[in-house]
Image 1: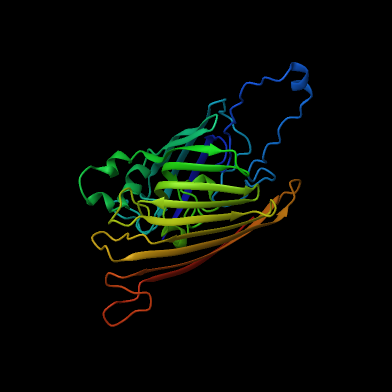
Image 2: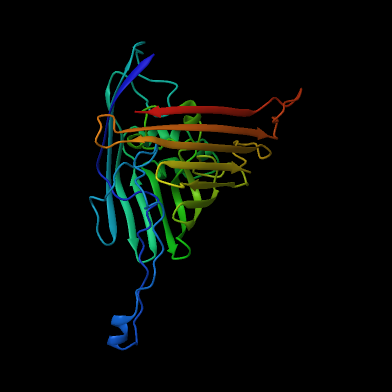
Length: 339
């Protein structure tokens, strides 16, 4: 049995991950000055999810405005320091059964991140470092570097997010990014400051924290986001076999008090040395803020419900189970209510 006291401080932060800060290049005009002055400005698409305050969401940033902001770069600094007390007092101070916490009865820097978002005209990018215990805990959970040469677990050890991309002014925005980006599967964020609880549930802890690959984001409106992923695998720096992971995300907010998220992942042959075993996973969440009274002592109340289903098939296992191929499936759910 263990209890933890987390000192979670996001000292300076920038815009949220869904923010579209790219600007459209303005070309020269040949119209007379008088015509330019009277011509109406072209209509710009509404920024996605900017119609309301979503800082109450589990797994999302709480900052409402950028502090370290400029024309080309929005900076971000994250510090996560914690002390975990274990009533069992393990001699080596190791905490087992947790994906977020590693040491007990000591003060540790869990995550120290420095980085931010780059934005110049339609070019975009993001970099966030991971120093502290995360720099060893995260690569340790990935077995893909054991295949082939080159130590990618060391190459990526101090990087939690690193991607570059391009933004198109189509509909309410289209983004294409390549690199390492955070996963939304499991509802909880990789960064503890963004979460309602310091230790994620079993459902969240057994879903990926990151993907390495390509991500296409399409915003048909300011309330809807559609994504497609082509990745090296299920939280893996390398590709385990010769089959990439394919997945996607649907995020919809009809208003500022409701968020519906669906993440789906399939096709990935993510078992090291077993090219015939494939994985499927569906993750679906509903988040509702049902109380919002800023002037009251109890200012906000919200609830989240998440359900997950997954299985692996082929290569010695099956979804239904046989005498020679045991069942390999996963089902889980979690409910959180925050006051």
